[in-house]
Image 1 (tube, one colour):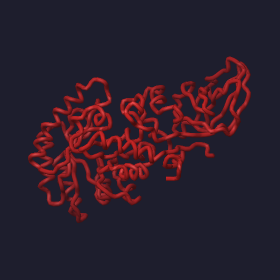
Image 2 (cartoon, rainbow, N blue to C red):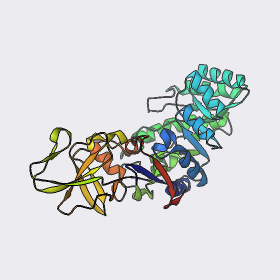
Image 3 (cartoon, rainbow, N blue to C red):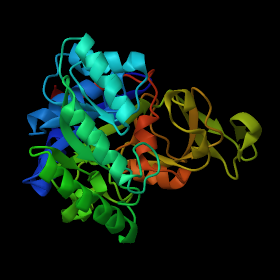
Image 4 (cartoon, rainbow, N blue to C red):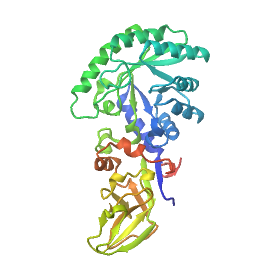
Length: 369
């Protein structure tokens, strides 16, 4: 028993990837394992995704690419984020493709690839409405693609965009982005045969068949998290992560007594309180103060009092479980989507926020991974 433990079922990740690959076919699946696999562990997630047929992996940073390669992960790998000159060298040495949208940047990548004695794959990004990385100017993006294709140490591997609203009910803006990208992408296919065209994230992969193109980039869904912030089961997805702790203390609490910083819980009746040694230092957010439930012995109990750095308290009522009992904070019916709704955030933030002091234990349907 550990004070806090995130148990990750790599078999669930494999099944989710297989489900997404089947939905996207004949498009290839690119599994996004950035941010330490959305808190699940990048290396085990990458291996599970590849075992289930993912043709590509994607990360956000050069260091993430280097981590995968250091672990022996092979195959096509794309760094989606912006890179400093130092980070560019790290990404190229890892054999990762990189993103680009300016001709000057293409020249820089070409020079660094030449100095390293290699040919680098480049994916040119057109910003069709996300408003972050990429150029909004389709002509500039086309010129950049031509510069990449004409460079001696570069290979134009792909062209891509990213959707801003694919997870929302109104498909209008998604379809406007798709229309803006598709025409430009068709021109790129004609001018650069063999280029990979990709746009769809998890939500678009599931909701908009026209967005799948040559490859889909699925992140949140491969971990069994619902991109629409509802029920993963409705999308045929299986949550892969459970967050556990244990009941470290059980004590009586008389009416009028309190628990936690600021006395934000004052008992309205005689009850029993349980202390669970997990808190916001572990990523269990302070906003869940008086605003969540945990599962102990197949029963739900409310979190009461302030979530502190290392402990939370729960109201165990008149029939408390025994000290030492397992506690489930995510899992056993408490979905990441539920916690996200309580915090007015998204499920991504729930799993990404589980801190590094919480060990990850990877298993395969309960057996050692």
